[in-house]
Amino acid sequence: MKKYISIIIGVILVVASIALAILFIQSKEKKKPKHVKAEKVVSVEKVKNGDVPIVITASGSLNAKNKIELYSEVQGVLNQTNKEFKPGTYFKKGETLLSINSEELFQNLQSLRGNLLNASISMMADYKNEFPDEYEKWQNYLSEFDFNKTTDELPKVSSDKEKYFLSLRNIFTSYYNVKNLETRLEKYLIKAPFNGILTETFVTNGTLIRQGQKLGEFINPNVYELGISVNAKFIEFLKVGQKVSVTNLKNTKKWNGKVIRINGKVDLTSQTVKVFVLLKGDGLKEGIFLDASLKASSEKNAVEISRKLIVNNSEIFVVQDSTLQLKQITPVYFSEKSVVVKGLQDGTIILSKPVPGAYSGMKIKINSRK
Image 1 (cartoon, rainbow, N blue to C red):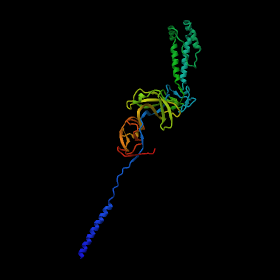
Image 2 (image 1 turned 30 degrees about the horizontal axis):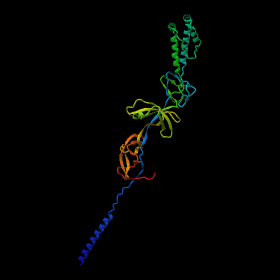
Image 3 (image 1 turned 135 degrees about the vertical axis):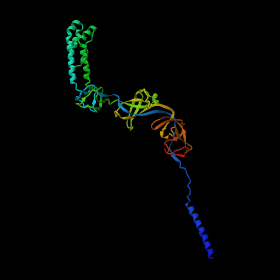
Image 4 (image 1 turned 180 degrees about the horizontal axis):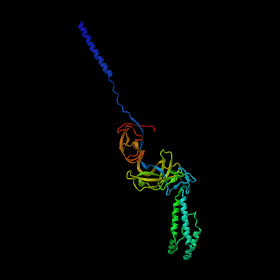
């Protein structure tokens, strides 16, 4: 009897163990959730083709149109003048920028003027006998001779005989020695060729100036040139006199300029041509960088979109039956932020903003909010 009871208990334990094992396995199993693809909400716009202006944008640095570098052609000590020779000092046209000590040269000039006067006076008696009709012009020349003024031109020679007469008495030699030194004396005084300011200076009062030494830089601060590099393929659309819109790099200031020169040579490396724009106005300074916009031409039956929407350089996502599809387009012109394209029909729905992870066939939902 005990034997049967043990067998029954054993069978019950085995069955119970199997039942518990089945319950345990079932509790471990997880229900697989159904994979529901979430529709991406996107912003779209409809294509409307038209004439799109091709606007060329380029940057460049500003340079004064009238600018000269000051160099010394003579040697001497720099004198003090009415205005300081320092950056930012303004000078009117004709005012003295620099004065180099020329006392020694001036004394030599006066000596040569004296030689010319003496030679002219000493020949007057013979001249009167030889050329009585021409005597008065020389008499007037000598009476007006001034040691403190630029020497006047010699009286006109009326004949070869008169020319030989004056030459034998060294009149011409004396005269040109004087004029040579007068020309040299002018180089000791540097005057402003136009209204402007000093932007650089390398010498101060009392400095010993040497021949060929750079002294400074002088500019007209009212008129500037902006040099920009334009792709050679657009040069045919540009012309002298064309209006140009110019802004600073932060786009907080704007000026209107015009094309004044177009280089006739294409840069071999960059395949660009240098275009020069004339600018005037407040806030312009030598050396600042500016952005220029030039209207080159208009592209018919095209549309302008963001560069971020372009895929593989020549495709764009369009919306068809709530899915994204790639469509081939023809880019015409790339600017920094946008691209002008052709090949899209009017009414075609395209993305207005790029969608991360977008792919052809992707299900989307159009954002109804404007």
